[in-house]
Length: 149
Image (cartoon, rainbow, N blue to C red; front, side, top):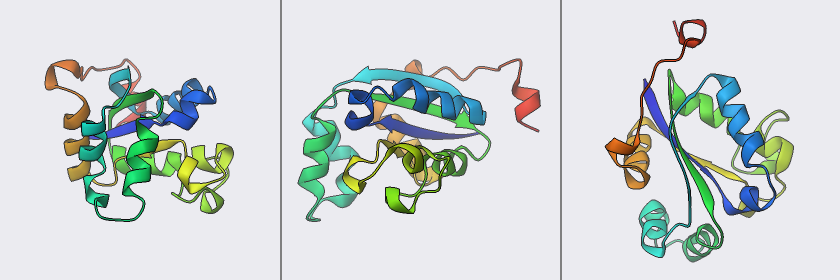
């Protein structure tokens, strides 16, 4: 089972889209193993976006993610990274397909509602940045045999 980090970003929280976004991941079959409503600290924001350090948009990313509370979610499932990213849609909302979170609700790249890990390796790192292992609950659902082979 893969794990991925999802961040429901400040714009989505402010717009009241948290429940709809969470519903889409659950409907897809991904299992929630951790979830928090938090204000991201400056240090954690810089750590999360450190891959972009030195790029012209780095400061804006950090300023934005700490501007309002977010919901961080650890999801688990077969091919969780690919499934979550397909559910989220393309980074640029104008390129996102209808039926995806960004395709249905976003207009601009700087307000694209949600973050999802982009690789298995980054999923492990990002989940660990926001959750301790004790905060994660990997649990079986009665529906799992109908979702996972």
